Image: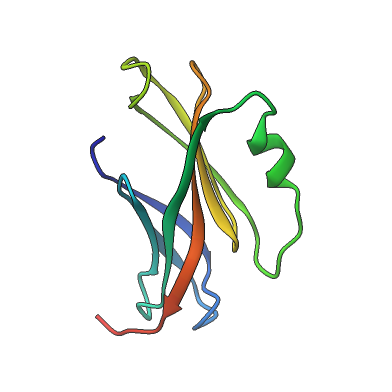
Length: 118
């Protein structure tokens, strides 16, 4: 799997500014970093599976301290090898990435956060 970089404009949990949050997705980790203050949340891979329960729909409406983000990216799926939309749900507790074609899902759990400057 190649790495991806996405952006989502949102209020930072650390500096409170409405700025781009930079999301870097790697096979075993995901980082969400504020483009203003550098505060970063780190997630590590916990499981991979074929989703039969539509986890994105179940998890996207759960309430956490911060808003959930539902993004998408069209890339080659690691499982089915077809170019397809990957649904990406980012919550305070975890990140779910699921292929719309084959339902292959990667779940990353929250690991740690740190505050840093660029």
